[in-house]
Every structure is written in structure tokens, then in C-alpha cells.
Amino acid sequence: MEGRPSSKRRSNSRNRSSFKEKQRRESWKDDRLNTITPTSGLDLLIRQALARNASPATYLFDEDGNRISPPASPLRRSVQPLESIADRMRQKRRSWYDGAEPGHGEDDDDKEARDPDAPSRLLALPTELQFFVFAHLGLSDLERLRRTCQFYRHILSPEYVRALFGGHQGLASQLTGHCQTCLASPGRASLILQPQTRPLSSKCFQCSVKARELGVGTRVPLASGAGAGAWVCRWCGWPVAGEAHSWANEQFHVQCYDRYYRVLWVFLCLGFAQFAVGVVAAALSLVYFRGELVVFAPTVVNFVLLWVCMAFLMFRGNRIRTYHWVGMVELVIMGLWIPPIYAVARDLQDGGVGSRPFESSVAALAFFATNMLFRLFNCIGNIVLTLGYDMTKHYAPQITLRRRLMNLLMTGLIYWTYPQCVEQRYPPDFN
Image (cartoon, rainbow, N blue to C red):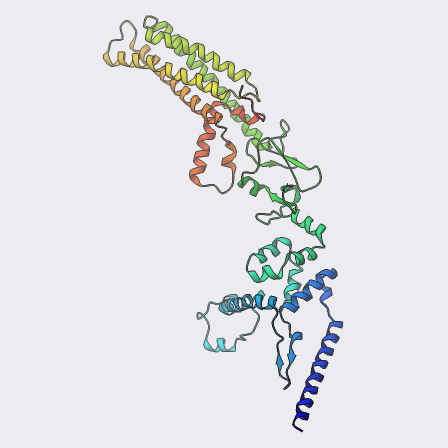
């Protein structure tokens, strides 16, 4: 007699369960999740995510008719800490997302009148609405969302993202249309293809220049299509995309080639000035210091070595690197100017200029010192060129002020010594 009520209650529980299961099956018939996207595989992934997040349709009933939750699966138990963290974050920052700081600018009545369960951020939305929002986001927004917390990194799985964009081909098109570092999409003509990565991806010009991945005088593939490429500018180190190249040289931007042309004119004027100073110094030594061997002999040798440097400058070309040889010659010339400067300065200090006019000795000392200063700059510049300094560094984005000033100094020494080095070809020949 006592067992009959329990069996009756058990049968009622079965009836409720079967009724709930029937209702659940009937609800799936009118399901509208397929309207998010026509991809059937994506719909399956959404259903799996909904099942993992314990939607209200997954509740069961006990013998007394109370609603209970099914035993949590291992995957569900792994997601529960993330959900608790999300709930705490939602409760902590609810007032901030509503436009007011907690405890400031609101009364106690307003706090009580506010619905504590009102969704105020993305984590508070139902999972169906979250997936509906995901379907309207681009690849860059989805990746940024995945980087916010582990919850979205788990929900927005690679399989879901691949199905969202139409499979492997659609995802590959999206990957090559965005920068893999900053997630920007400036256009395929402004993205450098990264063929060494799997899956295939791209990187924007700014991130590539910042990472120092581009070599001057090389051609990089672009993501705009098969066979599309761009030369790396020899002046600034940025890719020359589209019709931005100069008519004189396709490996330069239009503005960069204009600057290079102006620097060449300045270098030509400085070269004539150095040559003129060397000739005048030799003439002063020949006229006023012919009897003083310590002044006349080094001046004559320097005049001969001056023509040697001019020959190197005119005939070395773009392939052969002769910076080390020219640097040695410049160092010898600079050292040979020391005895004449010392001798003339000592005579001026002692007042024993002899039959020479005082003004001639002062002029000779000035020209000797100017020659030595020019040779010092040339020697340092050839050392910088021998070490292969990349003068496009000061065009890189986000560099410190100290590094920018150092790059400007090194670049100025290169422009002083041999600005035609921007047109040199690779690999170099040091023979």
C-alpha cells in the first residue's frame, strides 16, 4: 500500500519529463537559428555552444515537480569558472556601462529601482543573441573579442570562425585581407603576403617596416593578386605600391626620388668645395712653404692622394664596395695634415714667419685645418658605410627621440660621404 503513491508520483514525474521532452522537440521545429547564416555547419556549432552553456531547455524535473539541472559534463565544469568570473565582472561594472560611477550621482531609490538582472554588457546577453552579434562582426573584431577573455576564446573557436566565413577558402580570403599583427584592413594593395606562414596571412606596410622585415632593393609580394608585387623604396624603406613610383626609377617614391635628387646636388657642390680647398692648400704650400720640408712634402702627397679618392668615387660603380679602401686613404690624408698644421701654428705662436706675410700663414693654417676636418668627416662616413648601416631606420614608426637623432646623424654622415650608396646593388663585392 505504501509503494503505490511512490509509483504514482514516479509515473507523474515520467509524464512531466516526457511532456517536457515533447515540448523541447516541438520547440526545435520552429527554431530560427538557421536565419543567422545559411551555413548548416555553423548552425550545428551554435547548437553545440548553446548546449554547453546550459540553456533553459536543458532543465529536468524531480519527483516533486521542481526544476533541476542535469549533471555537469567535464566541458561544462571547465566553463563554469569562466562564467562566474564574467558574472562578477558584470556586477562590478554595471554602473559604469550605464553611464554613472558607483556611489556617485545617483540616489538610493535609483539603486533600488534599477533591475539587477538587466543586461548591461555583451556577457549578459543570451547566447543566441551573442551568436547573432558574432555573425555581424568581421574577422578583426572577432579576433579582438577572442583576446579579451578565455570565455570568448572558448566560444569563438577556430571551427566556428571558419564556418562563419564559409569554410577554408572564405577564411583564407579573410586572413590575407587583414594584418596579422594589428588586425587592420587597409586594402589588399597595402598588405604584404606572408607565404612562409601556414595558414596564409598578410602584414601591413607599417607593421612590416616596424619589424624591420623589408630589405632595400627587394620586391615583396602583395595580397592583391597573383604576381602582384612592390619594390621596397631605396630611400625610405617603405614599399612602393601602385603608381606611386618615380618615373626615373621604379624603386623610389616620387617624393623620395626628389629628395635624393636634391641631396645629390648638395653632395656635388660639397665635392667641388673639398676639391677646391685641397687645391688651394697645395698652392699655398707651394708658394709660401717650399723651403720647409715638414709642410711642403705632406701637402704634395695629400694632393696626389686627393686624386686617388676622386678616382675611387668615379669608377667604383654600384656593385663593388670600396668604402674600406677609401676610408684608409682618407685616414692617411688626415694624418699627413697634422705636421703642416703643427709647423705653421708654431711659427705663428713664436712670431717667426720670416719673409712670408702674416696673412698668408693664417690663410694656409685655415685651409690646412679645413682639409683635415673634411677628411675626418669622410673617414667616419666611410666607416659607417663599411659597417653597412641602414639609413632607412629613421623612417620607421614609433622610434624614440634618442634613436631618431642618432639615425639622423648617421644618415648625415652617409650623405656627406657617398649618397649614391642608396642605389647600390646586392650582393656586394668587396674585391
